[in-house]
Amino acid sequence: MDEQPQKKERKSLGVVFPNVNKDNPKSYDLKGSVTVEGKKYRIGAYKAEATGTGKLPAGSTYYWMHRIEPLEENQVGDAFDPAQLET
Image (cartoon, rainbow, N blue to C red; front, side, top):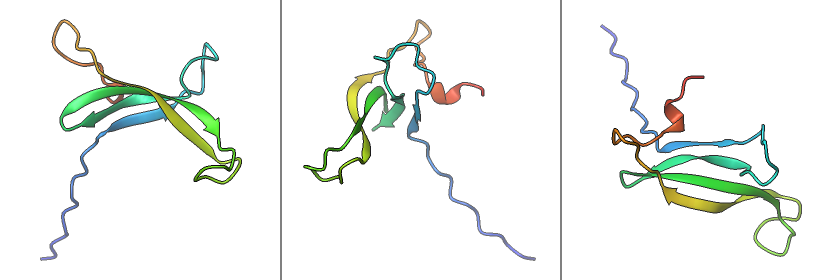
């Protein structure tokens, strides 16, 4: 009997996605939630372009984190997790 190797289950640390349908130009370009040491955080970032004076070549796209804060829990004690939304 052939035994197939079991795939190691990958632990999800969260989801971050581009905000392509922004209602407001001031909205984050990248947003989502991540888990660090068992605690969930909401993050938001803005898209920027490197000038070439730092580590990235001029014109390279990067995101700078503007918001990193703990997710607030609702009345039931559950934190909102966008990764659990149905698509």
